[in-house]
Image 1 (cartoon, rainbow, N blue to C red):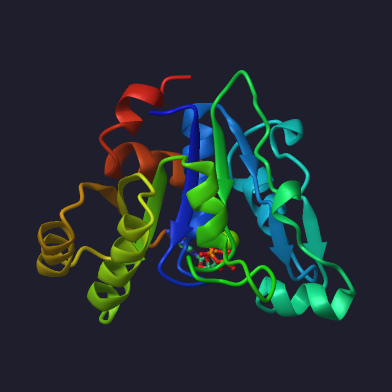
Image 2: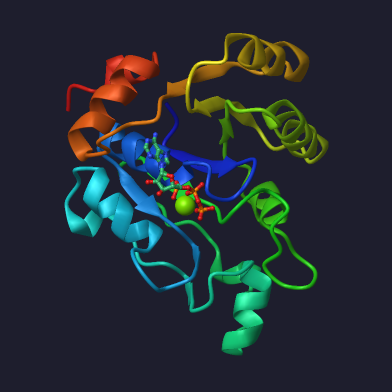
Length: 211
Ligand SMILES: Nc1ncnc2c1ncn2[C@@H]1O[C@H](COP(=O)(O)OP(=O)(O)OP(=O)(O)O)[C@@H](O)[C@H]1O
Ligand SMILES: [Mg+2]
């Protein structure tokens, strides 16, 4: 695995944070959510602190903490904040860093820039989280095409949900991307069940899970 990896997804609410927590835990790394939209309830950083089994200091502070649970461009406008690309430079750290975007790739940060533009500047490898349920082929292939158009390196797909063999195969074949693995729906979802599911579901995890 690379030292810095971006976790994105085909949509909001598909399990990026849970996967990112599992990955940061396995890599014994850091987690960073540059833009948090919505501060009621647990933030993504707080979820990761709970689920990754890492010391609290491994979760870096967000660059922007926006109050409303909306697209960051709108949430920032409501808070009277302008999100600047210059504030979204990733820190250089001695251990792996897992960075989670907000929502999907084309989520606007302001009226001109989307998260995918920031990813294109960063040039870091991206893991695309994708549901396995109906509709995912379209969303995932569109996301892959958007990444390719901007020459953003795609490490592979992390599927989230029950196994859907033909759906996963179709995405891998038509998208020309590797499947990194699959994280099933976990009940209960704890740091322990997450770690075990990451080791069972992702081949790279079995080499990194012994920390
Ligand atoms: N593998 C899983 N097992 C059980 N529950 C899950 C799993 N993945 C996600 N969830 C649950 O689904 C919900 C959405 O997941 P999550 O917050 O990880 O999505 P997200 O893609 O990070 O969303 P956002 O775009 O808001 O950052 C949460 O309640 C989370 O606990
Ligand atoms: Mg999240």
